[in-house]
Amino acid sequence: MQTLFKFVVCGLLSSFLFPPFFILPLGFVAFPIFFFLITDQKFLRKTKFFKFLCGLFYGLALNFIALIWIKEPFLIYKETSELFILSYLLVLYCSLYYGFCTLILSFIKNNFSKLMLIPVLFVLCEILRESIGYGFPWITYSLVYSSNIFTINFIYYLGTYGLSFFIILVFLIPTNIILILFNKKNYLLKIYFVTSLLIIVAFSSLVINRINFSKENKNNLYEILLVQLNSSLLDRNKNLSQQNTMEEITKIIQMNKSDLLVFSENDFPYIVESLNQLKFLQDMMHEDQTIIIGATKKDNSKYFNTLFSIQKNNILEFDKIKLVPFGEFLPFRKYLNFFNIIVGQNDYSIGEKNRHILISNNISILPIICYEIIFFNDLINKENFESNLLVNITNDSWFGELSGPYQHFYITRKRAVEFNKTLIRVSNNGISAIIDELGNIISHIPLNEKRTLAKNINKPENLFNLTYFHNLIFIFLFFISLGALIINLKNNE
Image (cartoon, rainbow, N blue to C red; front, side, top):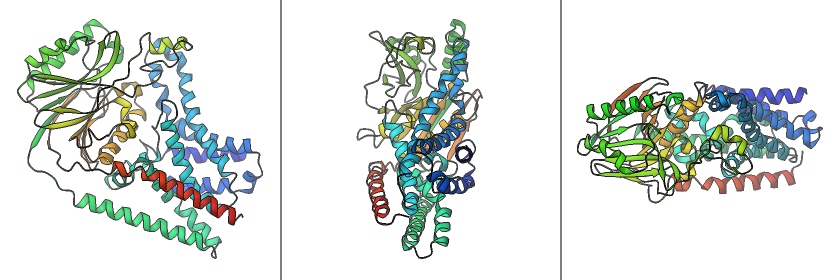
């Protein structure tokens, strides 16, 4: 039990690396502790099942804090509040992967091989969490570096998984130093240490160069208006509330001449069954103006979570592709119909349109609805690679007021840097923001404020990014794993 408790403490320390805490020095404590726990003789003498439990308890402690907001969607409606305990099944699921990490590491006898494999296995956990089933790549260690401009820009070169590996590598540097002090004749440890430092210095230099020499286009100013209505989820289906919301939206449109007006996910208060329902908005718009607004669309008895791009003479749409299981649709509805109280009788359908919309002034956007932003591998493609802007509309009131909205915001901030694009984010209740390609928060509206915010931005010119090269991390992980296994076979300790 004492060993399990130590893994719990280690998991708790790790949880405070993530938003909204960002206590980064704890990483230099948590990961060395983790390493010395899995190399401790008491741990090694335990059964394989106990070793699995150690990783599981580490994951439970980490995810219980990091995902403390996960119960919030159940607490919004009285009918579902008693079912909030079901949300912790996701915490358990995400924690299982760490159990397999410690189990796999228990088969490795060489401590240096374990040092090499810890970041590999942790990143592999993240890859599997994204790939298995519907995926949930919410908590990745790359999120730890999203708190400031210098650290967040590593993701431009490394990608999400590469940055996760890099961060864990950095946190394990003290472990490497301690091992060298007690194994001065082990040249492999010294080579690994020097190589790690060279990697850190090399990418730090690239990041400094990117930040210092980023060119800003002073011409082609483009005015954007963010609209944060901060309306209550409980009132959304009430007729009076719908009417008031619609009046508020029309008033904002009539009073503003911004080039781009962005509302949040499902801000349009009525179900859209025909584009003619949006024509009255076109009538009050100015020339060369674009309105982006989210709505529920009904098409041939199917429902879609849709982003509408409305111009004076044209309406384009994008239907959400990555839907929230047990939120926007019920998997295996035939067998899980007792979940109807949470999900409702109707499922949203998966969109099929390309993630690319051309708006006024020869500017194109890459539309992203709500938590689609966490699925970085599914967002960018050949058709939208050169989009000028990322536009993420969302409704974070589902996430409560604890860590959820902040984590969602910082995930979004990462994506701006990773894709090298200015990002426009509008959430119904916040945090809404304009973030440039370096991750600078140009302007924002805080959580739970009802406001509009107008800001001039420079039309993005440099749209090149390295996303196609980020997949090289899989080859890198393979060779690191291969090297660690060879060393383990030849140098059992």
